[in-house]
Image (cartoon, rainbow, N blue to C red; front, side):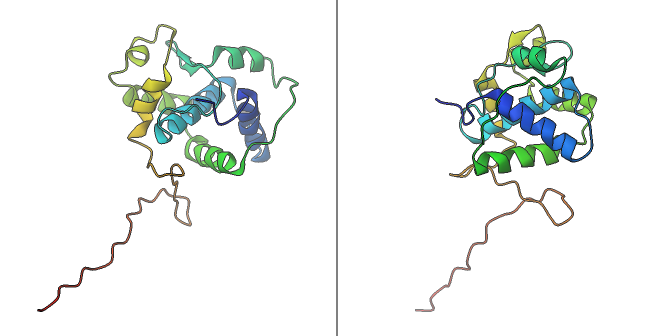
Length: 174
């Protein structure tokens, strides 16, 4: 199945630009966490489809795409950018708002909790985390619909669980 975005660089650069627009700095390891969460939530919401063509491994520190990590370890690389579709931008914005204020320790605890029972996550020996594992880890956290997850928030930004309205059933008196 083809990833939703053609290049992982486009997603990473989007997160870096978003951090800069909010006058903050996104450390390389935190960028890797956010990229992992984006890939995982996307796989969980879209039955295992990849958001981007990245392979994540997990070591004793954190999950990372080793190729992206090396490319970004000395700063933002000079690569051309491609415009992403609007639904992908909405998805990335929801991921950013959800995790931007989390510190790496909290993100690591979330990964350990989500990855409970997943060999690669529990061993943390540098092995690849399969997309099937990411799908299982994040599927229970994503609301599935035909068009993907709906990330609803209140006016204050707090996540809100919404249940669909069902019309009352009329009982006939015949």
